[in-house]
Length: 558
Ligand code: GLC
Image 1 (tube, rainbow, N blue to C red):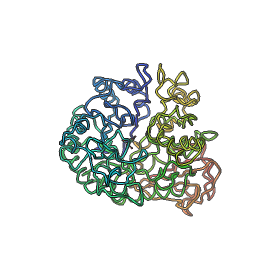
Image 2 (spheres, protein in one colour; image 1 turned 90 degrees about the vertical axis):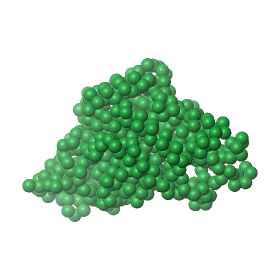
Image 3 (cartoon, protein in one colour; image 1 turned 120 degrees about the vertical axis):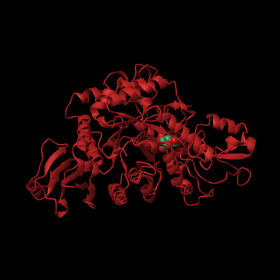
Image 4 (tube, rainbow, N blue to C red; image 1 turned 180 degrees about the horizontal axis):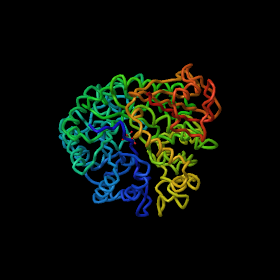
């Protein structure tokens, strides 16, 4: 099995990464042109979000043809060139497979709509409960009912996401065989990784009304989910020991993740879960303004760290992706402590047990754009919720505030390469506005500044390769109840690592849980191997941490 414990993955949202032909959309040649930059960072994998033929209602997560590349992104030759150029630099390619649903423009769905029974069975069509009433009261994750009426059949089809994204029927073996074919096709092209989109939603359970929630308890981690993943593994990616896989697990439970990502390798290499990112939600509701709850964040990260380790299962660890706002805006400080907070957040995540994922621009400390007009937004979810929030009675100003904090577009503004026009992303008109701070936050500046956030990420990645304890070690949470400090200890054979982070923009002290006292640590032979302040204060019996300070201490016992 590939030793993904030492790997770091870099996520690319191709549409916003680099535009090589001036049409305002990023493309595959743009990615190839930036491979040197990615290599400098030191990552092992690039994960590209979908670039297949798609009407782009959900930016490519609505796939019309799994075998063809959308001409906006380039052609098959461009893809092959990207894979081989990446390989020359020791970088492998991970693709994003969206198999919970297709686009309504996919030929399977078109045939279904035309009345072909065999293809109708590729999707989930059901009679309404009574005239005008959908089969269940489930809500779509993008707002509104999860069912769409088709008059011709007097039936509804299920769409957990946008109405243009009908859910596939995995209980139909023909669907499973088609999915397997797609994976083999891309494996033959040299792809060495797969990310499976919302994959824990593919096995639907009972179709019943949900009077407690939005319906998710009936289809999340559903009845046959483990069986379907094991089958997929056995006949596709499981046959190549170099391939790594990650499942995006929506509202999952830890018990299920023990199995999805067990080290026995029967299902997937690792999982994304989002519990630690719901700390500024109200329950599962994200379209609200709630301050981040640090204790909740800590409990969530630690319980997953300990639980997964205890059950020999593996996590992906991350703050950002194309569905999340920028982490420095979310949990750090865009202003005075921008640099310190971005580095602290990076330290916190990268030294945990798991495979770190970096989302494009995170390594530069990119921030939310804080758009002020709905015309600046592109994301279907944000646009739907802007309307829904106002229908619920919120003022337009409040709806904007919520969008600025939670919109997925916050993570989708173009990569800031230079301080020039459109941040060096395109010569043309970008499909979504470039953040105005690109004159201050950009790759060109950070590459030439050894104290930049970019170089700090580079060091963190290098540390994982140098010290086995980071990749392999056990985890022991520290400072569990401390209101400001996030700290943990990692151990592996003779190696020990202590990671101490001040999560806030003020001076704080930490008593080392009565055991890890700075002076003693120094005497015991610990050295600081990384930190976001120049000097190292290791005097006395208490840690005096500066705003957003992060320290990584290491020793090898003799
Ligand atoms: C995943 C993707 C997201 C997409 C959704 C539906 O959550 O990350 O971008 O909208 O699935 O495919």
